[in-house]
Image (spheres, rainbow, N blue to C red):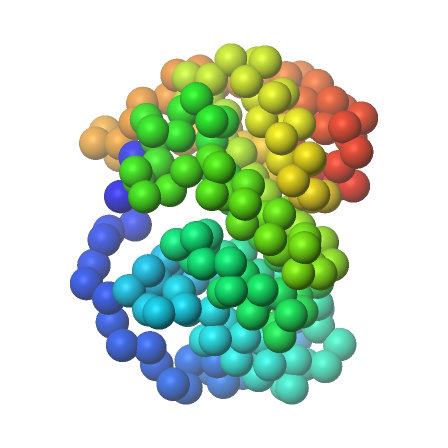
Length: 205
């Protein structure tokens, strides 16, 4: 129910037991060297889908032993044990969770069940559980100020995030939040340089 997202909310479906194997088969057929695995938010499940993600990574690595894995996951409804399970048992090369927008725009853009603080906690928990590399993403052009963007970047770095992406928000339909501004390429370059100076290992802006 985020105001930037065009994915329709639907009643939760039963997990498909063969999905991990099918994902692994797809990765093998495409001869992938790096795979990004994500999922819908599954707050209806006791573990938020953590065990299903772990099994998916196991199957992918069984089929493709040399592949690197990036998991883009939810905040697991604030379940630290789910974050720990995914990090310690799946051991992805990259653990990613998107904070989406700066703190001041969270309530305007994200579903009320999400929060900046919980997103930061999720990333800190992943670092504490031994995540090899953590990653997050921010959309800009949502009504935030330049200083709010820089401060959000500082907080993400303080949470242990090493990889950062910054992208222009694009309105998917007239029913979604309007674009407040379109940032020129030179602004993104300034943010990229600032992020690298903050200590991020890699930045895509």
